[in-house]
Image (cartoon, rainbow, N blue to C red):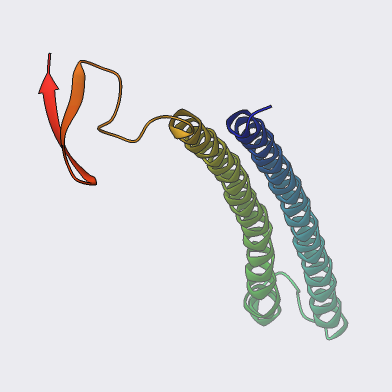
Length: 177
């Protein structure tokens, strides 16, 4: 096996290794993306549980306002007890619930965006590996074509060289035919 052929074989092995590494990197990024999506879903479930807890606490507080008003001889559905229930308990509770729903949505959308970024990075890693492999093979082919060939400007084409000898030195003279 000549040096040129050995160089081509080694370049081919290197190119295959680059392609495999790019593919493995893409798979790793895709696995990270799935993990991010799962993390987002876990955070969304936590936010949903917080929202449910807010609703339970709000319901208990409203019941307490009504019970205290009734025990004090007031009608719980009109006047001050109703205002306390609406403005002191229900509105803040509703705002907290809406915030928990927003957090739920944000957890999922953020995780999906991060997952898409990771998948994009995986695709780019594979593309970069492909370009690197093609570059390796191109360089090897260029090297293969230049190994063992005559230097540029010398060859066996239609150019012939004759020279005049003056002592030890020969002066070349090219003739084109």
